[in-house]
Length: 389
Image 1 (cartoon, rainbow, N blue to C red):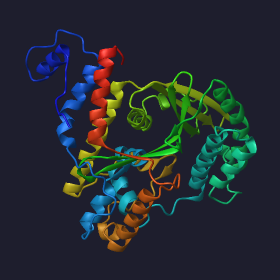
Image 2 (image 1 turned 135 degrees about the vertical axis):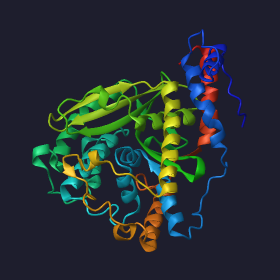
Image 3 (image 1 turned 90 degrees about the vertical axis):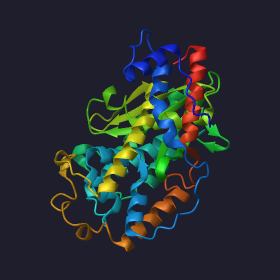
Image 4 (image 1 turned 45 degrees about the vertical axis):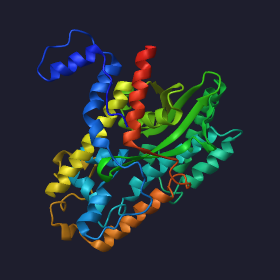
């Protein structure tokens, strides 16, 4: 890989300014700004091009804990930012993935069920009955479970699907179809990004659409919300969609343009809102810097064996944290140093990475970050030559 970052005179002047030399006299282009963000991290990403297909030998408790903590995703990064102690316990504790209150399961089941129904409606010749069946199959708790005050139950899912039928038909009437990548449909398209030092980032894209006339792609994110008003600020700067955008850049090799469309359902109002966003090269590069910063943060916690708790997160989403009152106890009490538990968690993670739990077909694409950065640099060069952003 060529580690040289080609900068315009304006960007070179800006870099000199950062070093305490003369201030830049020219306005930076978005591509120059993106390259300046990438230049310090290129040396960090000189990692093996060979993707590991087997679990490395993990003999000690520490090695097992570190391996688990290096498996990253959008949701786990949200926990990291909210409370590092909760991240540690969610990842390593014996109760990880267990003990959720039944009413929380209704929230999850509602979101997964509605998303499955909407995704199915985009399939060629799919009917409302097909979508209802997909929603039923995705509802993984007793059918009678509900949260009436939040208007969440399977029957509310069916009502939302009635609305979605017209929404999806409108999008399809514009010429959008489900994208196809070498025979793999763009539904729950799964991506694994290999980061430095053994970190991995896992992402699942709800839908990828393609417009055969305009040669454009569109990422679809399906969301449910407990708010009556769906404001664009809720999703405009989400890092989740940024990771999807970078993966799509790599997939289509910059042959086309695309946007991200959020289809958000308000449970109180029982209505959908569509929010389209474009993602610039600059904000995509910022995501690369952000994820590397998160990795360095976790490495610091691991090195010091100190995961700070954030008191502001002890009461979150209208309920106390499941670890409240006990997260300060010793590792042995919390169960995060029990080899048999760690082995089970690792086995579960490995199984999910080999046969992806969302789409049952394994990860659709695996990307080395070093390749992704090189790809992004080429895209920035092309954008500068063509005058794009």
